[in-house]
Length: 539
Ligand SMILES: *[C@@H]1O[C@H](CO)[C@@H](O)[C@H](O)[C@H]1NC(C)=O
Ligand SMILES: *[C@@H]1O[C@H](CO)[C@@H](O)[C@H](O)[C@H]1NC(C)=O
Image 1 (cartoon, protein in one colour):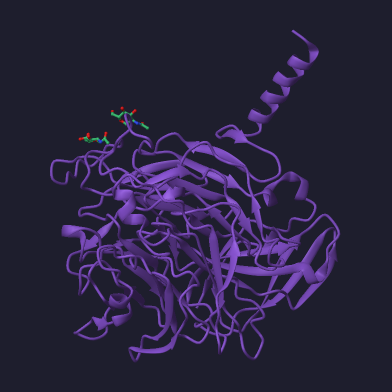
Image 2: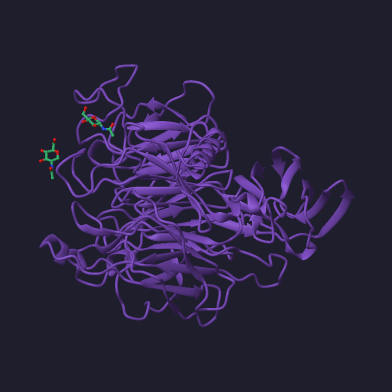
């Protein structure tokens, strides 16, 4: 054996010794991939991070037994396997949960008390409300039949400043409702959803819904958007269609984010939305005939608070449909998962896009996108991603089949979980990285309050490049992350205390329109390098 070879083996062992439970697949600038679990037994079609660093995941109950048995033998229609799991991020372990009705293509949001309220689904599940209370023991789903006023399949939920959720649309439902409901007749017509419903192909399901800073809801479906005063059921603004007019909503699935809200002390706070990818008009019907049209390679960005809002187009490094868009703690957007052609739907996507792309919203147009290191696992229809407290992005799911199909198909049903570590996690940035010394969590912070976060930063600190950022944990399914929201609070003052310790004074947001009450991840970001988050509760 040559000395270099022996050295390589030693290096290899060293690398693996430092990561006992994770296999490193790729490394270098441009991010790293880790395979966390070969199989969690179910396919992570829906994902929600809870305040105890557990991620709730589920697929469907109507497509055969999964690869995870249910310890309590609570069978549903002779299927005694689990279709939901709780994944513990800290221990990299998972346990089976029991759903008692079909959660397929449902939606959800975390209420202000930190409980997950998940709504709708298929058939028996279509009017269910399900509750998951974060715990350290053996808690499980609780289900409430007829919790919804209308059947909701492919709807979008959003948490409201008053603590309720709004549930918008769903298949053949051109209306919205509230949970919990406060009036008996709890559905409100929304003609925008029938106007954006292309005949033969809906192209308006899982609408992209964001709470604007003025308290109204920005609702995007197909290729255009409105601003809705949901209290008075009145459209207060109609936005132009995205140039080109191609559809961006399910099944021509693009994705969207509300870009970081910042300068929150300004008299007029601005908000911007970024919509990326999708499929050219007609692609859905073409893919049913085995013709897989190249996806859209454009993003469209709009200032939704502008008096005369216009879409500004940008070109991605590659075409993308069914991609997730995840807000990173530093306000950059990660496009991850998806395909290069076809659409959402059974067997209707091709050309997996294995490389994530980073989007830096504050760079000059033309220099915002950067392609990252690829994974080896295609994540097609029914794949998901979500940000974790440690700054990694959890990735799972992918099942373009009507059953669990592991062989004889182009893209086998994926039961695996991976994590993507953006390169801000590289050790080379450790001298810039804040680590939060105190507090370790905060159970009550109010609006417009001065708080102090103590951090350690070993390298040279640039005071005006320190920001306290709040990130709301989102419900992710079908390439859209509901309630995804980042508030960049900046800092009021940075005080050096000696020994690499600093106090960061910061003022919390001014209202529930900016930041609905509830649990947030608080990160301190220095020169784009984030700390690990701490959980805080705004109320
Ligand atoms: C799931 O179970 C099937 C049938 O037992 C088996 O063939 C397959 O390899 C399993 N897949 C995974 C990813 O564990
Ligand atoms: C997927 O699995 C189901 C049930 O096992 C089977 O009937 C079906 O033919 C499979 N589909 C494909 C595309 O192989």
